Image (cartoon, rainbow, N blue to C red):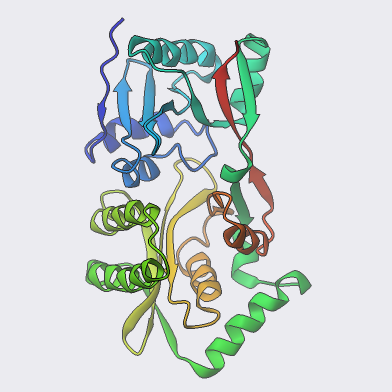
Amino acid sequence: MQYQFRPIVLEDKAIMDPYFRLGQYENSELCFGNLFLWKDSWKIEVCILEDLLLLRGRQMDGRRFFFPPVMRDFSRIAEGMDHCIAASRQEGETFLMYGVNERTVQLLRHNCPDCFTIEEDRNNFDYVYNTSDLITLQGSKYHAKRNHINKMRSTIDADYEHMSDELIEPCFASYMLWYEKRQADGFDPSLEDEKTAVRLALDNWKELDFDGGALLINGRVEAFSLGERCMHTDTAIIHIEKANTEYAGLYALINQQTAQNVFSDMQYLNREEDMGIPGLRRAKESYHPCKMIRKFIIRIAK
């Protein structure tokens, strides 16, 4: 069988969403919004077969990788894996798969216990929070968060506005100020990919069914956040969140305001991974996730 992969485009949302709508994957990678935002950076491609999606990309070092097959019938995961492996071999690539959740790992271990090596990928665990916790920030564990927000609000007026087309360019201008400050401290090529993702998110927020808003100080956007509700689940994913760090407590405030004003109808907020960045890990842990979505890397056993 010849597998025909192609880059994903915005019009694929209508085709791919029915597969994601089955809610078989909790992890943040496997939703159309995330795939679209990072399609250029990770060279993400799709092969659409009758009853499954094959998704693949390339790492920065050029190595090919696959995401887990997205199946209409999840019990056929072994068949989906066979397609991924065959597609990899078709091009002479070494098989590698990222973003594999625990449910998939359990099925693979049951169906073929000696076929794969399975490695825990801690840097890419998703952090999931009770939305109500992020709104109320109640209890001693959120004492510091409340203090940061209260201190800021006592000295600065920050107005929350729901996302609109009028906020697109002000949000991107705010991001570019943040980006330029970071690059001035030492060039980080990964921020080029993030800049592309932010531009795609803002330009296509309606088409991607994103929701969010911004905090304005003296009429200027100083923080903004965008995410999406996962179809047929009780979880929303926050894809983009940026704030001007010159305002202490602004990140805490945009987090709280987004939960309160945008996603209060959802039980959980998935705030994605920390990528192994120590400061980001401390920040995400400080909000006390109610659960972590574990992910694994899979290779063919030798």
